[in-house]
Length: 327
Ligand code: FUB
Image (cartoon, rainbow, N blue to C red):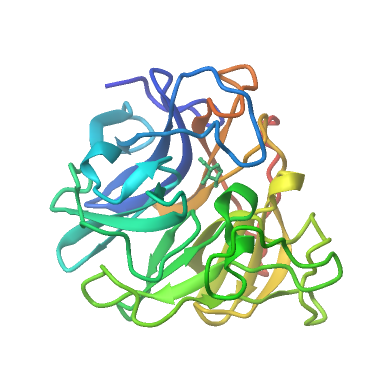
């Protein structure tokens, strides 16, 4: 048990946490974060410093109650296909079960996405023997839509290996598109009814500007980098994501869960630390952004802390930009 949460402050301080995926299950707020290790490592563009091994799930009855750390919910030693690096997870509920989706490197050092199940939103979770067939790259985020269809969004550049999948198979030396070519989008795949496989091969999502032109790879202020999240507001689909090298959380809006999505603006300005990664959730009638930064570790990139703040929509459905260090 830990302290009561405060906006824009670390949710917990006894462990480092990152990449929060927040959901309301059984009337409580559950947060599925990465569990950053308290180890000394140099940062590199491949993300080797993110050497995480397990997941701890956090929950809150409300924002006046202490945050609960439910302990280890899944460890990589219990997942037969995983070699290393349990990165940003997400969770979903369907069929009276909870599903934990997580990326990790397989024995060939290729990022894949696995799934584990539980009867309890806080776990422990039992992993499937192998990763989801046809899965690749990182940062799964799952939307169970109002018609009960479920979609997984995923992908991430650089250490997340998305560039290497442009031909449909893994090419270790593949580079990203030229600066003036359409940027790589995140991928979406509809999940099977049992939530354990993809119904068909993942499809790349198109993100366009206000004139309908694809956002290009050189447009680092707007192009997708990693950390996709999908939420619905007033019947519209909001795809939000990190711009990576320019350190923003931005969003694009569409009429269908598979896009296309039109770029709209910035949700969160850069935080302390290289990565930025978030989720958006409605809880008890208000909307919240969960995000992370490296303030607790004085800026060490791989020692991050989950925080939250409220978000506000304008009447036209756009989201007001948040400065993480201004109350
Ligand atoms: O936590 C490891 C990686 O850092 C995540 O997968 C990315 O989204 C970034 O936050």
